[in-house]
Image (cartoon, rainbow, N blue to C red; front, side, top):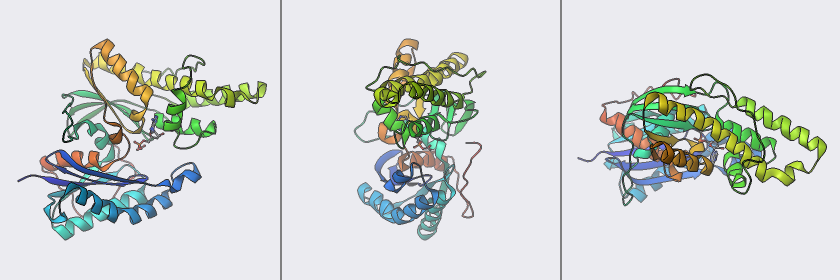
Length: 340
Ligand code: KG4
């Protein structure tokens, strides 16, 4: 009999539900929360309230678009963490309640695993292109910047990670600093496409091994803009495209230097990216260009699976389910998850 998995994602400010059958995506519904825009960042209390309002209609819509009934489900996969506790609580509680009502197992998923496995979401009428194990995943989001060696669907080894800010945080904080709005990544990406990436230079951090650091470059942008504005108050307004292009290039250079080193050290040639920042058009183009130059096989998740979505939670949950994992009903969500 087919395994029909309902995935539920509620770790931050997107309420999402998806249905997969034997690894094939039948539906993926996402309700984004606009309420945070006015505050320049996600307000945790507002996020959990919005999840409470959204979860029932989003799950119903996912089942209806998939053409299945709740009674047909085999298991429910849900995000246990990391994320905002109040937000996670909504998805976790809903999964438990529905699991009990339907008398089917629930399976917890680490949100980051979802990002790592996003390339394995099979879609009808889309050619299957999946990396072979082991492969490298550059995991880049608002909370993480890691190079992960993926040895199997559920076997991960972190080769390097940020020692301070995540790269998504650097995008977001610098966008705020430049008065460009929130979330910063997409805004900087859009403006960067119209600017000259070689116009300004920002110093790269010197961190040993495969670890990253993004706090220094943020400060260097801050001081640079402050000094230029002292000379010319119109500097920011007149140069924002070039500033964004140069800053984005500097972040991508930092990410790529270590990824290239990791590929060289491990000899691994299948390379993927995951997480919100993997939507960045400059990073996507650069990974493909490096791949061509270095003989890597590169796999970029479709844009709709780069930001938070339940399809990736469903696929990760499916692998856990196949491995025989079942989550007890006394499970609690966690805001931080040290390991995968
Ligand atoms: O994975 P994600 O949706 O949430 C978590 O952090 O878990 O990632 C959100 C991050 C934010 O920092 C946002 O600015 C960034 O992803 N982001 C981007 C782009 N789209 C989203 N960063 C750069 N370029 C983009 N196009």
